[in-house]
Length: 306
View 1 (spheres, helix red, strand yellow):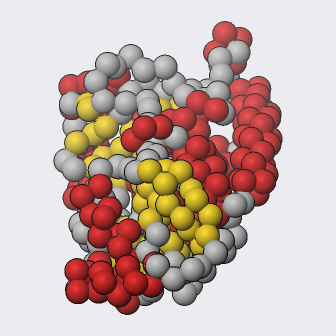
View 2 (cartoon, rainbow, N blue to C red):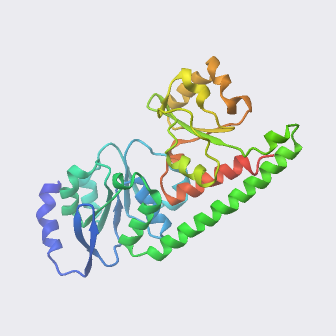
């Protein structure tokens, strides 16, 4: 379908249409001055476009993640496409005027096909090691909304500072009321984040959620060197509080099995009854909307809970 339509697309691209040149990973592309029919080829691009008060006509989500509750009230009218590979025929029928791709390797092989359908911009992702703030700025640059992106990031930074203050006040109040030693009361809380996916327990300290916890000054130092934990190394999760993320039923089943193991009871947060189960696709969100949703959950569990 794409090859059959290629000549039509090429002829349309030859028509004199006002556009501006955008530099990106694969070179430069002339995109419409005011794109109206954007297709986002990743969940983080979708979220950032929405955060910038634009709405794509469609978004492709790979990896099988189909439940994005934190985006549910913002994606009305957006055609959501899921799978391991995008349906190029369907994208052609949507008549996009701009396609936004990230350079994670998944779409490098079909870039030429996508660019035949509509002007296609490839934004850095692997090159920035998943820097979600930079990605927001990159998307904003394409959409000419850099001032709004700066405002969104400033608002996020202010929220981080406010939440740090609220957590400090709550922690001080909790410790004042607890029967603990002076030494213990002076210790700030530390939080660990782990995720169960693809049959493994991951704990590497570099995830999206880890970075947020680090900005809050709460990320627990890691005593493990590997990103994958075995049952024997469970006690090395040494935060006072543990947020653990799952997505599929298989993930939750594996977590339930781990919770039955004797070494699970030696995890510090388990002993303190401070383990919280969260959603993987949110805590691995890598976008501004997910970041705020993660802060919502941290506030819910650690500030607003008695």
